[in-house]
Length: 251
Length: 300
Image 1: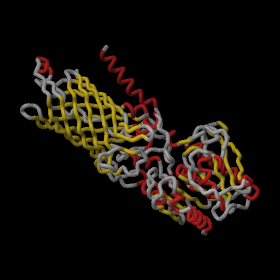
Image 2: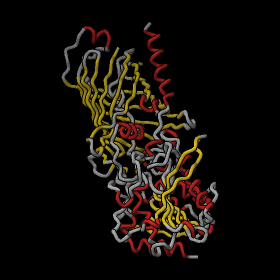
Image 3: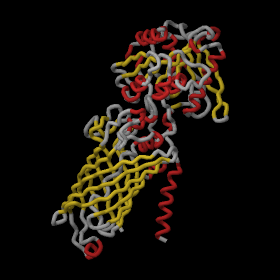
Image 4: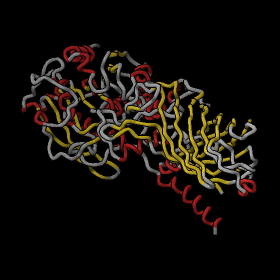
């Protein structure tokens, strides 16, 4: 969500852990990976831990994804609707209580259950403990998924997963955040109302566990030209490219 | 039991906001590992490549300390004055507020260059290290940076300087005390004119530049450094210089905003093609730079 600039003005040379932390927090607006692209089964619960962020070339170190983190809880309300909430752990360490929430709904699935289209409506909100500045950003995502490597249907699938066999998942879609403020600092006009991102991801699914990886193109229409760090973006001087990894435990 | 664990986990997560880590320290890229200022013999990175012809005789270089109060503590602040100490009561003096990197050795070429504006000795030039920089005591904060600036101005006033002969020059981070000196005017002297090279607008602009979203700076730092607002209260002339290729503090969102918000007196600007954040004088050309600074100082 955010393409960063840092506070080290004159010929930056520090590349220590704190720099990474700095970049990390500066990019906290870069939300985590897409949440529950395929909805959970009815009454199924899940806890997800995510880590990752935009790729950045840290001088003298390497090109790395910024490792920010969040914890998410989700619950299947029906086989097509999952509600979820996230707590941004890194933000919290810096005195910012950032919470995300939303509902993912499956609009369509193929008869063989291999394909589906889901949408997510949600929000992200944050408040700091220093000045109590509060922000609220609506969020709207849409994804197409494709399931492959279907394992055979087990009795457990029939009893507990709405008859769905375990399968790996490929998905692609668009995420959007909405900035509701019309002015920025000092009365300057807020240019961006919609901040889009393109998501391509993969879920390795086991019986109770999921290993999620996601590639994200963040703010692909916003310039990253005046940025002190070299963000790696497949669009060159636009946006930032993110890599995320997550672990989900279903119960 | 399971419920208690969940409640405990949630409690730990929410309590984690009490860590209250801040990123202000990154504003100050200071180096306080030195044991002495080496000036022309300094082997570290310099803020400017200056020809050896810009030589300052030892008799014109005065290193000294003054003290400031910071949260109840007394800090020794190191400073260098280039000029004649005995004629400060009649000279015009440039107070040079340096950027956020290292210490005065790094910026020594900048002080030498300003000492040659109008010819060596035309103006006295005072530079000092903020707390935590070089040999100055303390840890750098926004407040004690202003305190050190106030201390430097008090030293000048004690030597006989008056407002009409004070010129404040702020580069990068140094634009903050410079704007403060002409904005809120909390110091014992107020500058007659100010120069801002590659200034930043505010912490708020930094954060919002970095985030496509409109995020408050309080999510990241306590530091305000609100030059964009301070400059609105500035009623003395401004000379703004900024590299068009500045990739640290954007020409448009930082420098131009400060320039546009200055409306209580006349102003002058140099938009420098090709220049980045650290090399405006080089891209202007050293002679042009000196002449432009001189003409600004001398203009009524």
